[in-house]
Image 1 (cartoon, rainbow, N blue to C red):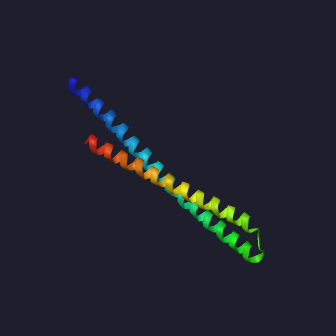
Image 2: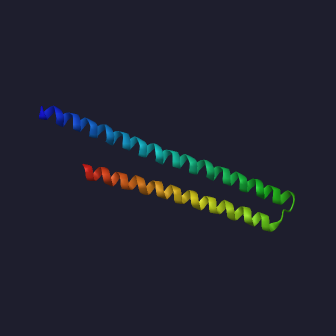
Image 3: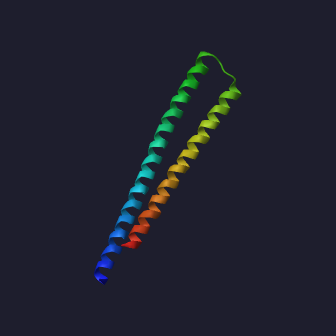
Length: 99
């Protein structure tokens, strides 16, 4: 009876650990995909802005504001990426602690 209870607890713990691993991996993959897509969009937007600047001289202040906003977006995305990597590292340390 005690052995079957132990087996049930072990199976439940194993399922919970596998589910948590899958959730963390999916979160990290989603963050990487979002960062890559937004970086590509920002680069395309910067190229379009530079093309518009070459075609017709836009207001320099507006262009500077747009570039600063894009750089701020890039910094925030890198912070999000570093945060996700930090959580992944904490999770791996937690798994090592469990083993």
